[in-house]
Every structure is written in structure tokens, then in C-alpha cells.
Amino acid sequence: MQSYRLEGLGGIEKLVAREEAVPEPGPRQIVVRVRATSLNRRDTMVLNGTYPLTARPGIVPLSDGAGEVVAVGDAVTRFAVGDRVTGSYFARWIDGRMHPGVVDQLGCTLDGMLSEFALLDEQWAVRLPDHLSWQEAATFTCAGLTAWSALTGAEIPKPGQWVLVIGSGGVALFALQFAKLAGCRVAAVTSRAEKTDRLRALGADLVIATVETPEWGMNLREATGGIDLVVETGGPATFAQSLIASALYGRIVLLTVQDQKGKPVEIPGSVYQRSLATIGRVFVGSRNGLDAMLAAVATHRLKPVIDRVFPFAEAGEAYRYFQQGDVFGKVVVDGA
Image (cartoon, rainbow, N blue to C red; front, side, top):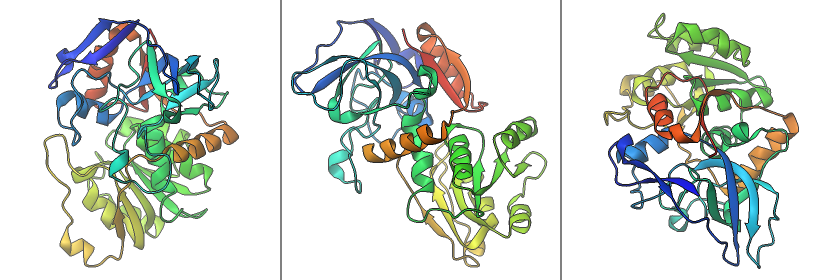
């Protein structure tokens, strides 16, 4: 089979294609023929050696991928040959709160999905909705579940409340779509004016282009009466404005704590002393959370937004394209 491995860290040149033997399943393992994978910001951090968790040497990258089961071990009970599956980001986190025993991640400490075949423990996978193509099904594991966890965490926003999303990456667009499913009103902020119409077409009720309105926080607060939930993916560049835009008792789910140069988020004291907003974090989610999200996706026949698809042989080009940052939705790599 064909696969990619990270032969060291520090750049795309470390992503190396290999010819390997097709894996054989152990008693409780499944072999998945991977039909598509997708990229997340975390994957570029793993590649560049800036991710907080050190990747295992020679790892197969990417947490996100979808395919069908082609072989099962003798003791497997959760899946059968022919099932459509995707992997769970935190392979050992089944439910409940995170704890030190569930840190292993596909594409970082465990071999991921950028391979023709993937070997997974049966507990590391979930079934996929039938209405999704392989390319669509490969986009939910990280960005989709992160957005879902941000919206369904400590306090689910009520219909009619305002949710703010930042940018047009995978997490932001999934959060927009999930918030609309919940009956919320959505404000979106983008750095590019040409993306405003596309965000409105996805359901955003209010869109602000930061190139036209750099100090957008008060504009949003006045237009909405205060944002009830901010899905904060912008980090240092947008956090202060998100805090200004928040309702008195708003919530900010802070997903990006530093920018690519290492600059951390700073809480402006002069703004926060006038606020009772709660600032919290989520870290993707559990396998049962992934199951719940995909059940909602199936019920509403939701489709993800895909920016561009690359062939398997051009996985390095997919990384380059993703890293330049000007994307609208998910970047997908087809299967080999």
C-alpha cells in the first residue's frame, strides 16, 4: 500500500511517501480502506514541530479520514466488513471528561489516516452517515467535533441567541452550520470582504469584514445587544474585539491561544473589568461526542463546506495550500 509518514519535523519536505505492507488486523482491530482525508490547523503544527504534544517519530499524519472496513479481527463486535467509518481524534477518550489516560491522538502519537489503509482498534472508530460522500465524511473528526463541543458544552445556546464565528476555516463554518441547526442567530467576522456573501449564503445573519471595520467589537455589540457565545478561533488578533462584542454574561470558547509566531492571547483588563463573560476552552471531544454530532448531521442531512480537493499523490501540495491560510472550508486529500 501507499502511505505518508513524517520523517522528522520542521516542514513539508519531512512528509515522505512510502510503500508498505497492507496491515493485518489483530483480534480487536479493523482495517479501513481510506477513501479521503482532510487537513486541520493542528496537522500543520504537528508537521512544523510547534504542536504542544510531540509527534511519534515516523508517524502517519492526519486525524481526519473516512473509508470502509475491509477486514476485522476475530474478536471485533462493533463493526463488520463494508461499514463506513471515521476515526476518533482522541482514540482512547470514549466519554466523560478528559484525563491523562486519553491523550493519544490519531496522526500524532498514533498512526493517522494519510494512508491507503489504516489499522484501528475497533474502539477508535465510529460509523458515518450514509448521505455523505467520502470527501465530505472525511472532514468531521477534528474541526467538526471541536465546533460541536463549543456549542454543546457547559451551556447550549438557546434558539434566538447570538453566536459569533471568526473567519472561514473548518471550525468556524461548522460552528455556523451547527448554530443555525440550533435555531441561533449567527454573526460572522471575516478578514476578506469578498467572503461576506458566501457566509450569508451559509446562514450568517450578520457579517462584518474586518478590512472595512477593524474595531468591530462595539459594532457587533450594538447590533446584537451582545453576543451570547463566541467560538473564538482567531486568537490574539481577534480576542479583544470578541470580548467587547460579548454580552454581559456571554461565553467565549477560546480555541486558539497563540498565533503562528507564538504571540499569546492577552486579556485586556480595561475591557474585562466591565464584563462578566466566562472564558473557557474545549479540546475536540470524545468518541461519544463524535457519535452524537454525526447523528445530528445525519438527521439534518448537513453537508460540510469543502474548499479544495487534492489527489493523494499531491498531499504535500495540500499542506502548502492549507498553510497559506486563505481557505473557505475544508481542504481534502482523496484516497490513493
